[in-house]
Image (cartoon, rainbow, N blue to C red; front, side, top):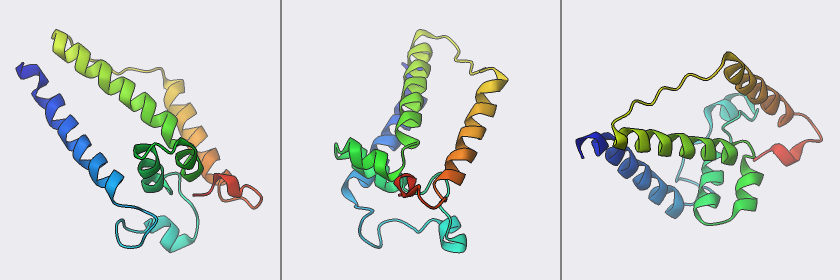
Length: 129
């Protein structure tokens, strides 16, 4: 049972964050800070639209979530699967070792960079939050 203390604390914190994000709309002013990169440069970073994406997902609007930030839902799914595996292995008393091949980090960096560039190009408004 002691092995599940950290996962329980992280789950409780995640649930509290989800409750806030679900109930406070990012579509009205004042609930969330403005993206500093967008505020300073006028460019969309890879995280722009995250609050709207999470709010939409937590309220069951998957289409609006993908419209706000199409990169985030698949990443959240991978994160949830990784967290679930970590909790499962911790419950069994085993250690979770994350050791992906180098190409995974490189591919993630390239996809993020290309996504950031694409969402700021004229004609690709569909990728903007």
